[in-house]
Image (tube, rainbow, N blue to C red; front, side):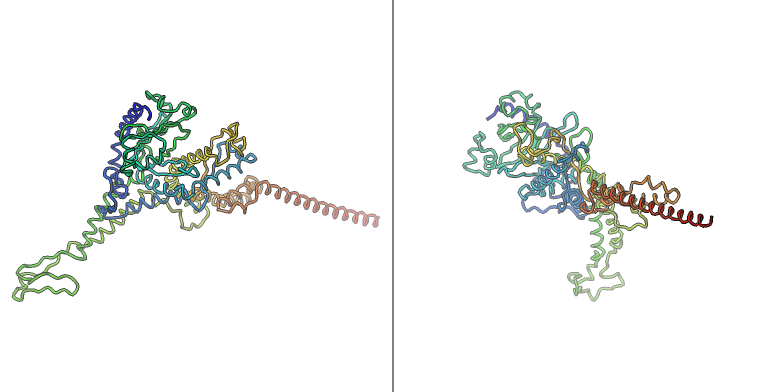
Amino acid sequence: MADSSVSRELCERGKYVFSVRLPMLSYWNELAHQFYPEREDFLVDHTFGEEFGTHLFDDGPVVLRRDLANSFASMLRPRSQKWFKPKIKNKKLQEADGVADWLDEAGEIQWNWMYEDLAAFVTATKSADHDFATFGNCILTVDVNRAGNGLIYRHHHLRDCAWLENSEGRIDTVFREMKLTARQIRQKWPKATLNANIVTALKDKPDTEFTVWHVMMPMEDYLNIDGADKAINRKRRGGFKWASIYIDKSHGDMIECVGSTRFKYVIARWHPVQGWPYAISPATSDALPGARQLQVMARTGVEALEKSVDPPMKAREDGVRGDINLYAGGVTWVDAEYDEREGPTLELFDVGKNAVLGLQAIDASRMRLADAMFVTKLTMPTERAKTAYETQRIWEEQLRAAVPLFEPVEQNYNAPLLSETFDILMEVGAFGQRMPDGKLEGMPEALTDQEFTWSFSNPIQEAQERIKAQTFQVAAGIAMGAAQLDPTAVQDFDVRTAARDAMRGAGAPEDWIRDKDEADALAKDQQDKAALSQAAALAGQAGEAAGAAGDGLAKLAGVI
C-alpha cells in the first residue's frame, strides 16, 4: 500500500474541490426538477421503482429537452453515415501520395471500434447528450475494456465529479467519486493491497459498498505532493504527462497510482461562465422562468377546464332529499314541499367559462419555450421559394440560427471525444504496430509528428454545402446576363470549378463526379479535337477560296 500521506493530501484537496462546486448542485437539481425529473438526484437519491415527474402538470419542458438532446446525435452523429474523418492542418500535405488513403482507412478503423456493441458508444453518448442539453456539462471516459480487445465508453453523473482548470482555461484535474462493492474492487485491482475491512467484506459480504475516488491530474502537480516519489513507480513515471490515482476514500488508503499518456476524461462544456470551471446550458437557463410559469398555467388551466366540464354547485339543504347524483342517469330527489320561488334547489357556479383562453395561453407559452430551447431551429426549411436567390436566403437564415446551437457540440464535445479515442487506438496498435524506431507501421512518414484534427459530415454540413448549389444558379444567371452586354465577361466565371462545388453541394455521390485529373484530361482532349476541327474548317474555307480565285483567273485569262 502506497504512502498514506499522499492519499490524505489528495483527499483534502478533493474535499475542497467538491465544496467549491457545491452551489452548482442546487442549480442543477432545479433544472432537473423542471426539465429532467429522472435526473433529479443531485441532493437526494432516487429509490428503485420511484415514479418521476409527479410534480409536473405539463410535459412540455421535458419533451422539449428530450427533443433537443436527441437532435445532437441525429444531426451531428448520424449512424447512417460516416460522420467524421481524421485530417491534418496542412492541406497541401494531406493531398500527398498515400496520406489521404491512410487517413480514410484510419477513419474507417476508428468507426468500427467505436460502434462495436461492447464499446457502448451509443449508450454513453445518448445519456451524456441529455446532461449536455440540460446542464451544459457532461463527462465521459474512454478506455480499453478489461479483456483488452475493445473500447469502453462510460458516462458519469455530474453529481459525482468535480474539476479544475489550468492557467489556459483547460480542464486538467478531475476528482470522481464512485460506489464500488468489495467484489468490484477486487475485480478491478486483483493484485492491489486492500484495506482489512474490504478484505473481510470480500469473505462475508462481497456486495458491501465502499467509496472510491479517481483522481486525474498533471504528473507535475502530483510530484509536488510530499511523499509522491514513494507512491509511484519511478520506471513508470518517465514520459507520462498525467497521474491516475485511485483512493479508497472510505479508509484514506491509496489503491493504485500509475502514469498515463492520456487524460482519459472528456468533459464537454456548452457555454462556460467566465471565472468558473463549469458551464451552463443556454437552452434550459433561458427557459427556466418559462418552464416554471408553464407549470403554474397548466395547473390553473386544468382546474379551469375541470370546473367548466364539471362545475361546482350550490344546493339548499332544506330542498334536497338525500345525495346529489350528477352522474349519467342519476336522480336527485327534491323535497316536494320546497318553494322554488325562494331560489333554485340546485345552482351551478359558472367559474370555468374562460378555460379555452387559458388553454390558448398555455399553447403560446409552449411555443415561446420551444423557441428558447432552440427546438424551433432543429428543422431545415421546407417552404418553396420562387427563385434560386430566395431559396438561398432561406437556407442561409436557417443555418445562421442552427450553427450557434450545434457548433459547440461539434467543437467542445464530438472533436475531443474522437481525439481521445484516436489516441487510445494509436496506443493499442489499431492503426499499425510501433516499429523499433518509434514510427507507426504503414503510416506515411509525412504524418509523423503531425497533429490530427477532424472534419465532419452531417446534415448541418450538408445544408451549408447545399447553399453552394443555390449560389451557382445565382452566379450563372449573373454571368449570362453580363455576357449579353459584354461577351468577354463569361471569362470571369470558372464554370467547371463552380459546377463541381455545386454538384457536391446538391448531394451528388462522389462516383458521379469524375476525378479532377481525369476531367482535366477529357477537357483538354475535347479542346484539342475542337481545335483540329476548327483548323480543318479553316483549311477547307481556304481551299474553297483558292479554288474560287483560280476559277476567276481562268475566266479572266479567257476574256483577255
